[in-house]
Image 1: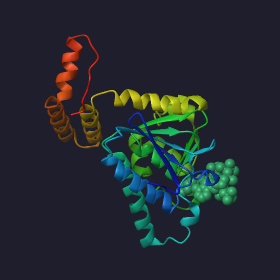
Image 2 (image 1 turned 120 degrees about the vertical axis):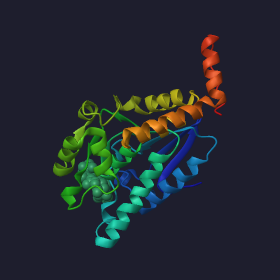
Image 3 (image 1 turned 45 degrees about the vertical axis):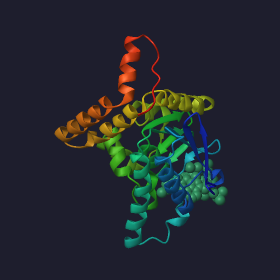
Image 4 (image 1 turned 120 degrees about the horizontal axis):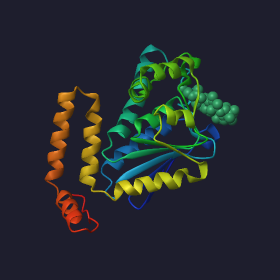
Length: 259
Ligand code: COA
């Protein structure tokens, strides 16, 4: 499929998504959000893709937010709809049962920070900058930022970012747990793809079960533990489990068939 605002390719079972509006610092306009929705819907059943890396085109930005030009006409009712539609796109990314890695190559502001938050892993270039500057525009984060940021780095730090709009550099993002790792800019994509390759070399039944179980971490503990046990059982019924354990005992590499 051809997209106006996204580039998409597949390399060794890893889908590479690039938000491609570099002249607008990859700000997400309505078309970009719609195309992300279509692409991530298609990825759910794409047999050629077992992990995804998402990044921004150009040197400067991952995504510099939602497109501010498209905000100006919003009122109370259309504002709720606007936020809900954006949230649904980012939910689709978070709920994808294949790992999604954000390769944050520059500004990740507003909806860009929220896009990174909806991904399962966040790898950043030393040039990355994170922020939720919405209050400076008279709004708040509306694509999950108030929820996912607080869950990831704690309410106090999330409120500091959201109430002041302060930008956090890559080193600080690493320190506060907003990103998993930081790399020199030239290494970022190589390292993101290498991380994706490690994941796709594992048994995919287990990878998907792990995503489901860890997602349940926000639930009350007994419920989360129930989901963990259920997913553990699902793994035990897989060919991958028999192959993985047998390969260990036979001192060879497993040949997973992902079923
Ligand atoms: N929405 C729409 N357009 C945006 C944008 C956004 N979120 N972020 C950047 N752009 C556009 C600029 O309007 C400019 O377009 P133009 O060349 O047609 O004027 C282009 O991208 C380059 O941005 P510019 O501001 O000139 O780059 P800079 O290096 O001086 O500043 C930023 C970079 C990221 C600090 C600045 O662009 C910025 O603050 N962007 C908005 C961030 C934001 O508030 N995001 C949350 C939105 S809810």
